[in-house]
Image (cartoon, rainbow over all chains, first blue to last red):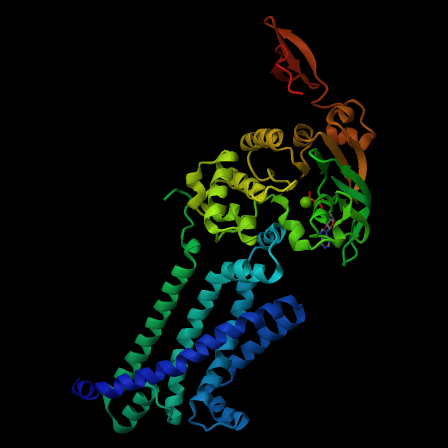
Amino acid sequence: MTWILANLGLLGERLLAHLGQALPPIVLAFVLAIPIAKLANSRGWLRGGLTAGAGLLYAVPSLPLFIVLPIVLGTGIRSSVNIIVALTIYGLALMVPSASEALRSVSGSTLQSATAQGYAPFARFWSVELPLAGPALVAGLRVVAVSTVSLVTVGGVLGVPSLGMLFVDGFQRNITAEILSGIVLTAALAVALDLLIVLGGRLLLPWAHSRTGGGR
Amino acid sequence: MIRFDHVGKTYPDGTTAVEDFSLTVDSHASVVLVGTSGSGKTTLMRMVNRMVDPTSGRVLIDDEDVAAMDPVKLRRRIGYVMQASGLLPHRTVAENVATVPHLEGVSRRRSRSRALALLEMVGLDHKLGDRYPSQLSGGQQQRVGVARALAADPNILLMDEPFGAVDPIVRAELQKELLRLQSELGKTILFVTHDIDEAFLLGEKVVILKPGGVVAQEGTPSQILADPADDFVETFVGSGRGKRALHLEEVDGRQVVVDESGRPTGVLHAAPESRS
Ligand SMILES: Nc1ncnc2c1ncn2[C@@H]1O[C@H](COP(=O)(O)OP(=O)(O)OP(=O)(O)O)[C@@H](O)[C@H]1O
Ligand SMILES: [Mg+2]
């Protein structure tokens, strides 16, 4: 406990660094997955390939990827660009199949009806298909967020500052409080992001939460 | 006026849904296409608003080939109602009704007040406007679908089995409501159903289709009833030896209408004030 109180500044710094590495890949994976999934859905063979490919990607162990990626990208091994790219890849591996499913779950007759009312193709995608895929997209995003927050810790092993460094350092110097605070803060961050996403979903997709038959 | 001029449709997978179909729907008239499942009714209807492009022949609206029109603009000036109402689940009822005005850039306030007025016109309380479609009954949703189709005040209404998914009592109400609306608004209506009773009730002209969009018979309900073109029509209409061959029996001094199999189907009254 005394260690924690003495190192509040360090904890805060690590937490912020962690968040800084987790947010860009979460956002990037989400934003990139949607057009990729849309494209994949329009070509049968591509969809099968991408879903299988995504599964394989996710099976690539993270530590080697973190080490190999800088060679490909030409960045330093401790650069946060490296971490962000690696985590975006993992995020995509989760999000593309889930976005593809989400878009496919939108009822075809609703889309046809939108076309019949005079929605132009992009307007139909943007204001009908995407919002209707919303609840399923949010579910996918939650998984990506939690997984990304926990994967950021791997960077700690390589010496990239994040909450992961707390447990690496804690193990080396045998400070239990440091290990525990690293674990607890990582979990708390994951839960907090998850809650934010759920709340955001409720605000943006109010219709998805009023499925009752009665009045109001 | 809508004119189908020798249209045909073969889908990319090789299915020929319509072989060679011609029909004229006069302005302000209501024409019903009726036929068994897969006879090409939806395909024909969707040629009018270019959701399906014919592979041969052409469709003309007021003598203008629709193929030359911008499909999005064309669709905005044609009302379309479909079976499962097709309302947007993420928009409130009022927003759904205001879809086309909204797409056309009419201000939110104006399109909303028009939407609420339309709800009343199709017999719904305007308070329902702030609900989501999933919070309405099937029959109410269909009414909203009709209101939405009317929102841009189109000349043409396409209705693809709009009342197919509701129970018979609600369906009868909706049919009555449509007749009332039509007598007030005088739209050009192309209506699709596989219910022959509905066709005879709503259509000034009825077109009976065989698979492949082949016209088995085209005429007014009474023409078809009185003089079915062939066995197919006769079976379809059920007039051969069925419930439409009725006779009278006197029971307790009242005239009871009895069908072919001897089941009473109603009581005969003096003719009401005629409707046409
Ligand atoms: N997009 C499509 N691709 C291939 N075939 C199609 C397509 N749409 C319809 N068909 C086929 O064309 C034929 C006519 O279909 P259509 O939907 O026009 O029939 P329908 O008379 O409206 O039937 P229902 O009463 O069941 O709605 C059917 O054999 C159907 O399988
Ligand atoms: Mg159909």
